[in-house]
Image (cartoon, rainbow, N blue to C red; front, side, top):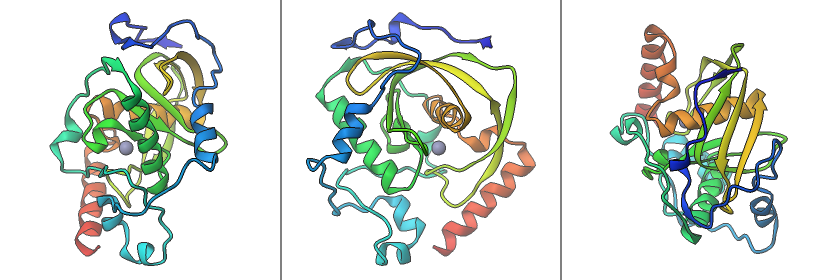
Length: 233
Ligand SMILES: [Zn+2]
């Protein structure tokens, strides 16, 4: 493993964050997962994020998309906010938990596997993931502690660049430290899709899109394809 980051004390939000819960396999978001499984969670349908308008009106008519009351819109490629670096979450409050819950709802609504703060115009270091076979996870003020030297190529997409995909090379395994939606810190080793999505979302916090990680000629093709799709939708 190549170490290029480390736990930074300054990243720790004030208030209820604690550092006592370092484990290699944390139940990072089990409470949140139970919440989404419970009767208390009631999706509402009075908000249509931009991504859906671009995605397909036909899908909305067919009610294939679940739209939640979030008040959040997903910013799309071309929006300068996506290029800005997010700032650490300074205080963990009930609002942080609520934002995390709404981000997960929006991610699910968009059929995405990850969503980062800057994608909804929130310039704070927070992102959520939910990959197949895993539970929803929340990462607040994450640090990538280690990355494997071995890299893998895999096709990626992004809710901010709907409809286009490209192969991106990333480390196969990583070790991450972050705080979850309950304000508890955790450290986790991951590989496969979860590692990939985590790196993709972490990039968003740095103002980097997956299209920035592919060769220029390929990037131009991907962006041209996206612009074409946008024009006809
Ligand atoms: Zn993305």
